[in-house]
Image (cartoon, rainbow, N blue to C red):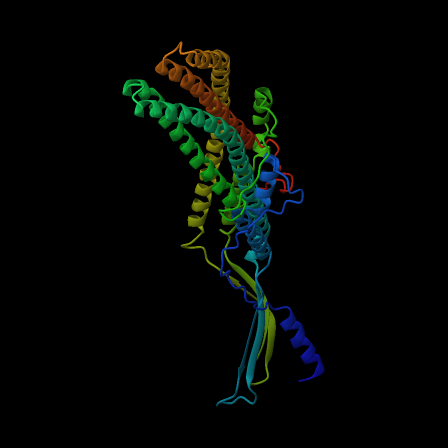
Length: 437
């Protein structure tokens, strides 16, 4: 082999792809701690940021970006020209030399549909990025909601443990008195029933809190036994109904799922153009040189044209039209659903806020009644049943307040997620353009 041939072979090999192994993990890659430089409790916003960074589902989904870019690159590659040749040794007859021919051809139809195919692939790649951003929005919303519920749940646990401890003490006193035959079973029953109810509420709250912490660990790719310490406050801005309604008008240009549907529609529109342009007959152009066995050499252009007698690409055109109509309807339905969902959330929030104000207004009176009942019971001026009823009424009001506060906070987080408050915006996506008809 000559030096030039050797160099050419190296260049050709250098442009080829090479295989490299990528072994699968043998053990679950769960972390045993969070990278927290301050080593302090995390805020809701910090938890949401860590979820975007560490969530394993998001990390896996981001690989779709590379796939989409590879597909975009593949769509921009034109088909290679075809080189054909033959060498025909002389076997018999009056010829004097072997015959040969050589020709090169190129598919011209691929050039006709090149630009709309590129636009369709570009829209498809951008749609993948929009879908990924929407998944990030949902992950942030989920992380916010879990963190808020954990913070409010810890506050509830403090109160529920105090209530259970008080009623447990009251029940123990009554049970000792019952054992000493100082009180009747009828007198001891209210304390026992109140303690059992308080303990059941406490156990349910503790189980719910443990479930929330496991969900948070899964979201942050942490082992189930890791405890994430959170601050005792919720660092989210208050909901402004007017600002939320104003944000609805700009949602089609900001919400990633709506942008993804618009990009999908734009891709379908370009695919329809491709299908319409593909109705033109297949056209292959090229040139060839031939030599027969008598040394007569011919050279000239050649063309191959498909005859659109049976298949005029009408099936693909119909599919492309139907796909575009389907995506058009899906986008309209999603747009309506978004507005209705946000509107419903705002109405629910208003109702919860009114209920919470009512409960808060009743709480001082319920607490005063419980305090007076405790004082009167200590002076033996109130029977056991009345005392327990008044105390448990106050505890129930406090629990109702905490339940409403959690429901209201969940609505606030949901509304923020729906309108994209404090979330990454769709500023990195290309504009949705249309090709010329």
